Image (cartoon, rainbow, N blue to C red; front, side):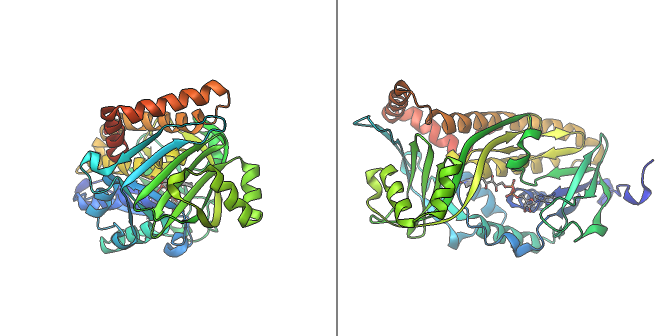
Amino acid sequence: MADPAAAPRAGAAGSPRIAIVGAGPVGLSVALQLRQLGSQAELQVFDAQPHAAAAAGDPRVLALSEGSRQLLQALGAWPTDAATAIRSIHVSQHAAGLASLPRVMLRAQDSGLAALGYTVRYGELLVALQAAARAAGIDVRYAAPVRVQPGDASARLLADGDGNGDGHGDAQAVPQDFDLAVLAEGGAFHDQRQRELHRDYAQTALIGQLRCERAHEGLAVERFTEHGPVALLPRGADYALVWCVPPQQAQELLRGDPARALQALQRLLPACCGRALELRLFGSYPLGLNARVRARQGRTVQLGNAAQTLHPVAGQGLNLGLRDSATLARRLVGVPESGLDAALRRYELARAPDRVALLGLTDLLARAFTWGAPPAAALRAGALAALSAASPLRRVLQRRMVFGWRG
Ligand SMILES: Cc1cc2nc3c(=O)[nH]c(=O)nc-3n(C[C@H](O)[C@H](O)[C@H](O)COP(=O)(O)OP(=O)(O)OC[C@H]3O[C@@H](n4cnc5c(N)ncnc54)[C@H](O)[C@@H]3O)c2cc1C
């Protein structure tokens, strides 16, 4: 029997009541866009973190595309002073035994852009989004880990004792029924068996900071190695490092002698970086593909990492999630409770091409460069050479990475 205390109350003039689960970049971005587009829906955002500042120190550095910058800037949530421009990207492979290896250079000027993208620390971005949400009067409840029971005509939120918080924080806020639950809780590697598409890459991403002899001048480096990709992202005067290695090696590098780690990294890097001078490793993330085929179930819709967790090889996870958020907000604005099902169907259809393309691309890139047989290395070299020689193809790829496969 329905719990009368939990029954959904309509928002202004019959507008829906919407719960957003997760006040990460994607959840806050949906809430802000709905408000900015003039949605009258009643919004409540729940987050498991004990308080707003808890994730502000997250050291992960993200490469965000020009498209993402434009979106965040329009929301008043772009941390201008903290962002570093990416003006060119050097893509190459490290393969022992192949003398001369091709490389691909992607340059902003080839697409008529000031920058191919920007780097920003996760924590800095979150602080900017939180400030914008406060200014917009969005109700965000922290210490409120929740789980959702999807239904055909509503979604029930229940307290989740297994979240990041203590499970008691804002317990009085749930259970509640909403007309729609937007799941932006970030997904998780450890529950990947619950999703329809999953792959354990047997790789761990080490994140850190690298100082090189040569100034980066906005250069980002993507280096494919037999164990996984290495990415250097310009960040202030240094590079932010994402170094993908087998899990066992990750532990050895994290706990071992920093000078040996620096030497091991130096051997993998292309000459354009110059000599590596100083390396600081901050932490690690296990890597997996973990995605849902369908983005919705009744009145529950998943987006961002809750819908798909990708390998960071192409730096596309959040870019994709922000595009999810933009499409969802546009589909929902002005839609009464009775129109939600049709709006969600349209959302799912619109996002399919972008999601499928990036799931396929990142999965291929994460694996193809680790295939060990000698002909594979030569084939990869051939593919890079072809991409390097064909400028129209390179420009198409470049534009796709900057603005996405828009549905
Ligand atoms: C090493 C690494 C490098 C990366 N580099 C890039 C990059 O260069 N470019 C890029 O675009 N992407 C990159 N990514 C991916 C990017 O970090 C994610 O795509 C992005 O953080 C997803 O945002 P989100 O809001 O969906 O989820 P999250 O950032 O995970 O936020 C989820 C929020 O939900 C909250 N939450 C969790 N469970 C609950 C619950 N039960 N109830 C309530 N709240 C809950 C959490 O506290 C959190 O605040 C990288 C990822 C890694 C690991």
